[in-house]
Length: 459
Image (cartoon, rainbow, N blue to C red):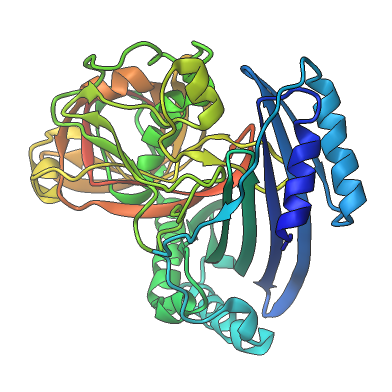
């Protein structure tokens, strides 16, 4: 990493033209992946990416620059370029760098780079054979394993100096089934803020067979009936709707600009009484967890909505200044090429007290969305359109025939008010979230919920 003298000189250069604040974000990342298709390695990648980002702030204005050079003079010149963009009356700023320890909640047992590719490949082969051997309708299987080790250093003119290491491991399984010349897919992508012990802990065969089963069921399924009726959205990745349609609208990135439907609504009722929503970056070894955010602030459990009442936003330092509010430890970025902003970590609707089966049995007619897929969202309005990867009709309180082609259409603010039942089977699922500060690992989650009425696209 960088020595104190270099950090001091770079920060001093960054504020030399009158800025109020400067920050260094040093990033040294090693990543690798193996993709296995048709009983052979289709691709394997590994590499190292390192660089330093320098952020300079004056009042509420920000300039961000970066370089992948660790030559001291070049780093100072990069800092001076940012300083000149903020040129104003020079103020004396004293920098007292004091290195502080970061409490590590994410214990790593087996570093991924200590495992030979041959051993990693054995897990991919097992998954492939379990998928491809499930049924004759399975036409293709694609298996990938990735891992990343990110070492970071954060320092600023307020004296903060912290270092941390983040280790991510993920396993992807994709199955394609064919029936009557039409293709349907199943997908699973478990991941964690863990080392290779995570892959070793997975029930590879069971996850693979479930993925193939989803593809087969949807290949043979009829089409979903279009209309407006109740939908039961299952746990885990079902939380992607809250994440996209509501979570982004609670980030200070949009709230500070007044571009969110939830701007200025703290303390107001925005959801049904049964809804409590949380973003918690402190959960041990979860995919979206961090010991500290990308400004060096410790992560924490943020209760966003409590019993339907909006309690908090997700706030980074700069947008917090614009809002007159403190950081919630929610500042994140993909790497040194991106300035940080407010982002989610592990975001979920909290567990209720009902059983999933009781929610199903109390629904006379509706859709059971067992597995959600991707979609599109307008963050300004919260309007969304999400595909249902695996769906079933509910008839007379029982899960009935499988259906495909279903989409859920609505607005985040409306769906929150229309949730009328929440189960106790909270579960998390992993994804990559994109925004203006790049793509980052985030968990989405929820127990099974029932939306009393929502527009369902189909036939």
